[in-house]
Length: 356
Image: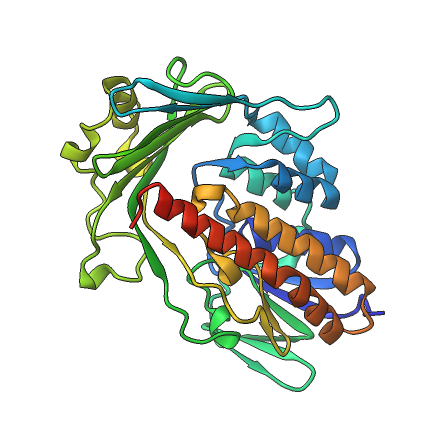
Protein backbone atom coordinates (compact mmCIF):
# COMPACT_ATOMS: atom_id res chain seq x y z
CA UNK A 1 0.00 0.00 0.00
CA UNK A 2 1.09 3.59 -0.66
CA UNK A 3 2.24 5.21 2.55
CA UNK A 4 0.11 8.09 3.76
CA UNK A 5 3.44 9.79 4.50
CA UNK A 6 3.70 10.32 0.73
CA UNK A 7 4.05 14.02 -0.08
CA UNK A 8 1.65 15.25 -2.74
CA UNK A 9 1.69 18.77 -4.18
CA UNK A 10 -1.31 20.15 -6.05
CA UNK A 11 -0.89 23.21 -8.28
CA UNK A 12 -4.06 25.31 -8.51
CA UNK A 13 -6.68 25.94 -5.82
CA UNK A 14 -9.75 26.00 -8.05
CA UNK A 15 -12.66 23.60 -7.65
CA UNK A 16 -10.76 20.55 -8.98
CA UNK A 17 -7.54 21.09 -7.03
CA UNK A 18 -9.26 22.04 -3.78
CA UNK A 19 -11.59 19.03 -3.93
CA UNK A 20 -8.73 16.62 -4.62
CA UNK A 21 -6.72 18.14 -1.75
CA UNK A 22 -9.71 17.68 0.56
CA UNK A 23 -10.12 14.03 -0.43
CA UNK A 24 -6.43 13.18 -0.04
CA UNK A 25 -6.11 14.95 3.31
CA UNK A 26 -9.20 13.08 4.47
CA UNK A 27 -7.32 9.84 3.69
CA UNK A 28 -4.24 10.96 5.61
CA UNK A 29 -1.89 11.93 2.76
CA UNK A 30 0.58 14.78 3.27
CA UNK A 31 -0.84 17.35 0.87
CA UNK A 32 0.19 20.91 0.01
CA UNK A 33 -2.09 22.97 -2.24
CA UNK A 34 -0.32 25.76 -4.13
CA UNK A 35 -2.14 28.86 -5.39
CA UNK A 36 -0.45 31.61 -7.40
CA UNK A 37 -2.87 34.31 -6.19
CA UNK A 38 -2.57 35.94 -2.75
CA UNK A 39 -5.96 34.44 -1.78
CA UNK A 40 -8.23 31.73 -3.17
CA UNK A 41 -10.28 33.39 -5.89
CA UNK A 42 -13.95 32.70 -5.21
CA UNK A 43 -15.19 35.09 -7.88
CA UNK A 44 -17.01 33.83 -10.94
CA UNK A 45 -20.55 33.38 -12.13
CA UNK A 46 -23.34 30.85 -12.07
CA UNK A 47 -22.73 27.15 -12.59
CA UNK A 48 -24.97 24.30 -13.69
CA UNK A 49 -23.86 21.22 -11.76
CA UNK A 50 -25.24 18.11 -13.46
CA UNK A 51 -26.30 15.17 -11.31
CA UNK A 52 -23.11 13.20 -11.94
CA UNK A 53 -21.16 16.15 -10.52
CA UNK A 54 -23.28 16.19 -7.38
CA UNK A 55 -22.74 12.44 -7.02
CA UNK A 56 -18.95 12.83 -7.34
CA UNK A 57 -18.99 15.44 -4.57
CA UNK A 58 -21.40 13.49 -2.38
CA UNK A 59 -19.37 10.30 -2.56
CA UNK A 60 -16.32 12.20 -1.37
CA UNK A 61 -17.97 14.35 1.28
CA UNK A 62 -21.76 14.69 1.75
CA UNK A 63 -21.25 17.92 3.73
CA UNK A 64 -20.15 19.64 0.52
CA UNK A 65 -23.29 18.69 -1.41
CA UNK A 66 -25.50 19.71 1.49
CA UNK A 67 -23.96 23.21 1.54
CA UNK A 68 -24.38 23.53 -2.23
CA UNK A 69 -28.03 22.47 -2.02
CA UNK A 70 -28.60 25.08 0.69
CA UNK A 71 -26.89 27.80 -1.36
CA UNK A 72 -28.46 27.22 -4.79
CA UNK A 73 -31.55 25.91 -6.53
CA UNK A 74 -32.32 22.49 -8.03
CA UNK A 75 -32.87 22.59 -11.79
CA UNK A 76 -36.62 22.41 -12.49
CA UNK A 77 -37.05 23.48 -16.10
CA UNK A 78 -35.06 23.97 -19.29
CA UNK A 79 -36.89 26.30 -21.67
CA UNK A 80 -35.74 27.10 -25.19
CA UNK A 81 -36.78 30.35 -26.87
CA UNK A 82 -36.10 32.01 -30.21
CA UNK A 83 -34.59 35.47 -30.55
CA UNK A 84 -38.05 37.05 -30.67
CA UNK A 85 -38.79 35.56 -27.25
CA UNK A 86 -41.10 32.92 -28.67
CA UNK A 87 -41.36 29.47 -27.11
CA UNK A 88 -39.51 26.68 -28.93
CA UNK A 89 -39.72 23.77 -26.48
CA UNK A 90 -39.08 22.88 -22.85
CA UNK A 91 -37.99 20.02 -20.63
CA UNK A 92 -39.21 19.60 -17.06
CA UNK A 93 -36.77 18.01 -14.62
CA UNK A 94 -38.03 15.79 -11.78
CA UNK A 95 -36.16 13.85 -9.11
CA UNK A 96 -36.82 10.77 -7.04
CA UNK A 97 -37.15 11.36 -3.30
CA UNK A 98 -33.64 10.10 -2.48
CA UNK A 99 -31.97 11.42 -5.66
CA UNK A 100 -29.42 14.23 -5.71
CA UNK A 101 -30.62 17.09 -7.93
CA UNK A 102 -28.77 18.97 -10.61
CA UNK A 103 -28.03 22.41 -9.18
CA UNK A 104 -27.92 26.03 -10.32
CA UNK A 105 -25.54 27.84 -7.98
CA UNK A 106 -22.87 30.53 -7.73
CA UNK A 107 -19.28 29.33 -8.25
CA UNK A 108 -18.36 31.18 -5.05
CA UNK A 109 -20.72 28.97 -3.02
CA UNK A 110 -19.26 25.82 -4.57
CA UNK A 111 -15.64 26.70 -3.87
CA UNK A 112 -16.39 27.93 -0.35
CA UNK A 113 -18.18 24.66 0.43
CA UNK A 114 -15.08 22.73 -0.66
CA UNK A 115 -12.60 25.06 1.06
CA UNK A 116 -14.47 24.69 4.35
CA UNK A 117 -13.26 21.07 4.44
CA UNK A 118 -9.58 22.06 4.04
CA UNK A 119 -7.16 22.92 6.86
CA UNK A 120 -5.94 26.43 6.09
CA UNK A 121 -2.31 25.52 6.76
CA UNK A 122 -2.31 23.19 3.75
CA UNK A 123 -2.65 26.06 1.25
CA UNK A 124 0.38 28.08 0.13
CA UNK A 125 -0.42 31.41 -1.57
CA UNK A 126 1.63 33.58 -3.93
CA UNK A 127 3.11 30.34 -5.27
CA UNK A 128 3.55 30.96 -8.97
CA UNK A 129 5.06 27.94 -10.69
CA UNK A 130 7.97 28.48 -13.04
CA UNK A 131 9.09 24.91 -13.81
CA UNK A 132 8.98 21.27 -12.75
CA UNK A 133 11.91 18.86 -12.67
CA UNK A 134 11.96 15.17 -11.78
CA UNK A 135 14.24 12.55 -10.29
CA UNK A 136 13.63 8.80 -10.50
CA UNK A 137 11.35 8.86 -7.46
CA UNK A 138 10.25 12.45 -6.94
CA UNK A 139 9.04 15.64 -8.59
CA UNK A 140 10.24 19.15 -7.76
CA UNK A 141 8.18 22.32 -8.21
CA UNK A 142 10.20 25.50 -8.75
CA UNK A 143 8.43 28.79 -8.00
CA UNK A 144 9.09 32.28 -9.30
CA UNK A 145 10.10 33.58 -5.87
CA UNK A 146 13.06 31.16 -5.90
CA UNK A 147 11.51 28.61 -3.52
CA UNK A 148 10.96 24.97 -4.37
CA UNK A 149 9.00 21.98 -3.12
CA UNK A 150 9.96 18.31 -3.55
CA UNK A 151 7.58 15.42 -3.09
CA UNK A 152 6.38 12.06 -4.34
CA UNK A 153 3.78 13.43 -6.77
CA UNK A 154 2.86 16.77 -8.34
CA UNK A 155 -0.67 17.19 -9.69
CA UNK A 156 -1.55 19.99 -12.10
CA UNK A 157 -5.03 21.39 -11.48
CA UNK A 158 -4.08 24.76 -12.91
CA UNK A 159 -6.69 25.14 -15.62
CA UNK A 160 -6.77 25.48 -19.37
CA UNK A 161 -3.56 27.58 -19.43
CA UNK A 162 -1.81 24.97 -17.29
CA UNK A 163 1.88 25.49 -16.61
CA UNK A 164 2.15 21.93 -15.27
CA UNK A 165 0.91 20.51 -18.59
CA UNK A 166 4.20 21.46 -20.24
CA UNK A 167 5.86 18.73 -18.13
CA UNK A 168 3.40 16.05 -19.30
CA UNK A 169 2.52 16.96 -22.90
CA UNK A 170 4.53 19.95 -24.15
CA UNK A 171 3.30 22.66 -26.52
CA UNK A 172 -0.44 22.00 -26.36
CA UNK A 173 -2.32 24.65 -28.34
CA UNK A 174 -5.73 26.02 -27.42
CA UNK A 175 -8.52 25.34 -29.92
CA UNK A 176 -10.78 28.36 -30.42
CA UNK A 177 -14.47 27.41 -30.49
CA UNK A 178 -15.60 30.58 -32.25
CA UNK A 179 -17.40 32.46 -29.49
CA UNK A 180 -16.59 35.49 -27.37
CA UNK A 181 -18.54 35.08 -24.13
CA UNK A 182 -19.73 37.52 -21.47
CA UNK A 183 -21.09 36.25 -18.15
CA UNK A 184 -22.59 38.08 -15.23
CA UNK A 185 -24.79 37.86 -12.15
CA UNK A 186 -27.51 40.41 -11.50
CA UNK A 187 -30.20 40.97 -8.89
CA UNK A 188 -33.45 39.73 -10.40
CA UNK A 189 -36.89 39.15 -8.91
CA UNK A 190 -39.05 38.54 -11.97
CA UNK A 191 -37.32 37.54 -15.21
CA UNK A 192 -36.02 34.10 -14.28
CA UNK A 193 -38.10 32.03 -11.82
CA UNK A 194 -36.47 29.71 -9.29
CA UNK A 195 -34.93 26.60 -10.85
CA UNK A 196 -35.47 27.79 -14.43
CA UNK A 197 -32.81 27.69 -17.14
CA UNK A 198 -33.69 29.75 -20.22
CA UNK A 199 -31.84 29.31 -23.51
CA UNK A 200 -32.15 31.68 -26.46
CA UNK A 201 -31.18 29.36 -29.27
CA UNK A 202 -28.37 30.36 -31.56
CA UNK A 203 -29.26 32.60 -34.44
CA UNK A 204 -27.93 35.71 -36.22
CA UNK A 205 -24.50 35.00 -34.74
CA UNK A 206 -25.51 35.07 -31.05
CA UNK A 207 -26.66 32.74 -28.27
CA UNK A 208 -27.66 33.42 -24.65
CA UNK A 209 -28.71 31.67 -21.46
CA UNK A 210 -30.17 32.78 -18.14
CA UNK A 211 -30.73 30.84 -14.93
CA UNK A 212 -31.79 31.50 -11.36
CA UNK A 213 -28.98 30.77 -8.84
CA UNK A 214 -30.40 31.87 -5.48
CA UNK A 215 -33.31 33.76 -3.95
CA UNK A 216 -32.47 37.08 -5.57
CA UNK A 217 -29.95 36.57 -8.38
CA UNK A 218 -29.86 35.40 -11.99
CA UNK A 219 -26.82 34.32 -13.97
CA UNK A 220 -26.62 35.16 -17.65
CA UNK A 221 -24.27 34.22 -20.47
CA UNK A 222 -24.10 36.04 -23.81
CA UNK A 223 -22.18 34.52 -26.73
CA UNK A 224 -21.28 36.14 -30.06
CA UNK A 225 -19.55 34.47 -32.97
CA UNK A 226 -16.42 36.39 -33.84
CA UNK A 227 -13.02 35.98 -35.41
CA UNK A 228 -9.94 36.54 -33.28
CA UNK A 229 -7.21 38.96 -34.24
CA UNK A 230 -3.72 37.50 -34.53
CA UNK A 231 -2.73 39.39 -31.39
CA UNK A 232 -5.49 37.73 -29.37
CA UNK A 233 -5.06 34.10 -30.42
CA UNK A 234 -4.44 31.89 -27.39
CA UNK A 235 -5.32 34.53 -24.80
CA UNK A 236 -8.41 34.30 -22.60
CA UNK A 237 -9.59 37.92 -22.45
CA UNK A 238 -9.99 40.16 -25.50
CA UNK A 239 -8.50 43.62 -25.64
CA UNK A 240 -11.98 45.20 -25.87
CA UNK A 241 -14.42 43.70 -23.34
CA UNK A 242 -17.43 45.91 -24.16
CA UNK A 243 -20.51 44.04 -25.42
CA UNK A 244 -21.28 45.33 -28.94
CA UNK A 245 -24.64 47.14 -28.75
CA UNK A 246 -25.69 45.90 -32.18
CA UNK A 247 -25.23 42.28 -31.05
CA UNK A 248 -27.04 42.74 -27.74
CA UNK A 249 -29.94 44.36 -29.62
CA UNK A 250 -30.66 40.98 -31.23
CA UNK A 251 -32.06 39.70 -27.92
CA UNK A 252 -35.67 40.38 -26.84
CA UNK A 253 -36.05 43.53 -24.75
CA UNK A 254 -36.69 41.80 -21.40
CA UNK A 255 -33.62 39.57 -21.74
CA UNK A 256 -31.49 42.47 -22.95
CA UNK A 257 -32.46 44.61 -19.94
CA UNK A 258 -31.26 41.91 -17.55
CA UNK A 259 -27.80 42.10 -19.11
CA UNK A 260 -27.82 45.90 -19.36
CA UNK A 261 -28.63 46.19 -15.63
CA UNK A 262 -25.39 44.39 -14.72
CA UNK A 263 -22.51 46.69 -13.66
CA UNK A 264 -19.84 46.32 -16.40
CA UNK A 265 -17.04 45.93 -13.84
CA UNK A 266 -18.69 42.75 -12.50
CA UNK A 267 -18.92 41.03 -15.90
CA UNK A 268 -16.46 38.38 -17.03
CA UNK A 269 -15.45 38.32 -20.70
CA UNK A 270 -13.56 35.40 -22.22
CA UNK A 271 -12.89 33.68 -25.51
CA UNK A 272 -14.15 30.10 -25.62
CA UNK A 273 -11.56 27.35 -26.03
CA UNK A 274 -11.04 23.66 -25.62
CA UNK A 275 -7.98 21.47 -26.20
CA UNK A 276 -7.49 18.34 -28.27
CA UNK A 277 -7.49 15.07 -26.31
CA UNK A 278 -4.08 14.45 -24.78
CA UNK A 279 -2.23 11.18 -25.46
CA UNK A 280 -1.46 10.79 -21.75
CA UNK A 281 -2.44 12.26 -18.39
CA UNK A 282 0.87 11.82 -16.59
CA UNK A 283 4.59 11.57 -17.07
CA UNK A 284 6.75 10.14 -14.31
CA UNK A 285 5.54 11.72 -11.07
CA UNK A 286 3.55 14.57 -12.66
CA UNK A 287 -0.18 14.18 -13.34
CA UNK A 288 -2.90 16.42 -14.79
CA UNK A 289 -6.56 16.71 -13.73
CA UNK A 290 -9.50 18.96 -14.61
CA UNK A 291 -9.17 21.55 -17.37
CA UNK A 292 -5.40 21.15 -17.35
CA UNK A 293 -5.96 17.60 -18.62
CA UNK A 294 -9.13 17.87 -20.69
CA UNK A 295 -10.51 21.40 -21.15
CA UNK A 296 -13.72 21.17 -23.13
CA UNK A 297 -16.67 23.11 -24.49
CA UNK A 298 -19.32 23.98 -21.91
CA UNK A 299 -22.11 22.51 -24.02
CA UNK A 300 -22.46 19.34 -21.91
CA UNK A 301 -21.77 21.06 -18.57
CA UNK A 302 -18.99 18.60 -17.71
CA UNK A 303 -16.22 21.05 -16.81
CA UNK A 304 -16.30 21.06 -13.01
CA UNK A 305 -17.93 17.64 -12.88
CA UNK A 306 -15.13 15.91 -14.75
CA UNK A 307 -12.54 17.51 -12.44
CA UNK A 308 -14.35 16.16 -9.38
CA UNK A 309 -14.64 12.73 -10.96
CA UNK A 310 -10.88 12.87 -11.62
CA UNK A 311 -10.19 13.60 -7.97
CA UNK A 312 -12.48 10.89 -6.66
CA UNK A 313 -11.03 8.15 -8.89
CA UNK A 314 -7.43 9.22 -8.31
CA UNK A 315 -7.93 9.15 -4.55
CA UNK A 316 -9.37 5.65 -4.77
CA UNK A 317 -6.34 4.38 -6.71
CA UNK A 318 -3.84 6.13 -4.43
CA UNK A 319 -5.55 4.40 -1.49
CA UNK A 320 -5.65 0.93 -3.02
CA UNK A 321 -2.49 0.59 -5.13
CA UNK A 322 0.89 -0.82 -4.10
CA UNK A 323 2.81 2.18 -5.46
CA UNK A 324 2.26 5.64 -6.89
CA UNK A 325 3.42 4.40 -10.30
CA UNK A 326 0.79 1.66 -10.24
CA UNK A 327 -1.91 4.10 -9.10
CA UNK A 328 -1.16 6.54 -11.92
CA UNK A 329 -1.15 3.82 -14.56
CA UNK A 330 -4.48 2.39 -13.36
CA UNK A 331 -5.96 5.86 -13.16
CA UNK A 332 -4.91 6.77 -16.69
CA UNK A 333 -6.11 3.46 -18.14
CA UNK A 334 -9.60 3.98 -16.72
CA UNK A 335 -9.92 7.72 -17.01
CA UNK A 336 -8.35 8.60 -20.37
CA UNK A 337 -11.11 7.15 -22.62
CA UNK A 338 -13.80 8.75 -20.47
CA UNK A 339 -12.39 12.28 -20.66
CA UNK A 340 -11.65 11.84 -24.36
CA UNK A 341 -15.34 11.06 -24.88
CA UNK A 342 -16.35 14.13 -22.87
CA UNK A 343 -14.11 16.28 -25.05
CA UNK A 344 -15.23 14.69 -28.32
CA UNK A 345 -18.95 14.89 -27.62
CA UNK A 346 -18.77 18.42 -26.17
CA UNK A 347 -16.97 19.69 -29.27
CA UNK A 348 -19.44 17.85 -31.49
CA UNK A 349 -22.41 19.52 -29.79
CA UNK A 350 -20.68 22.89 -30.17
CA UNK A 351 -20.44 22.35 -33.91
CA UNK A 352 -24.03 21.17 -34.20
CA UNK A 353 -25.42 24.27 -32.54
CA UNK A 354 -23.45 26.53 -34.81
CA UNK A 355 -20.13 27.37 -33.21
CA UNK A 356 -17.27 27.45 -35.67
